[in-house]
Image 1 (cartoon, rainbow, N blue to C red):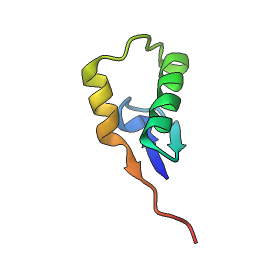
Image 2: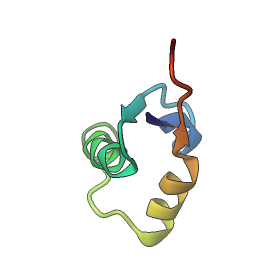
Image 3: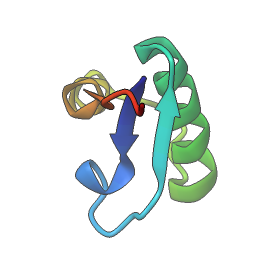
Image 4: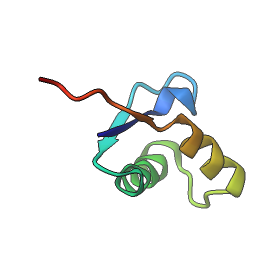
Length: 61
């Protein structure tokens, strides 16, 4: 499982996105960024920042 805490990219945002793959997380992040933050165009710099903050979530027993 992969995860991104939006607050790691946008200060103060409590939203967290999870997905099985990085691509799934990126798709969910793009939707959230558009709806919650008004982001219409993802710059290469923003995409790199998002990718750098996606991390693995330890499996729960």
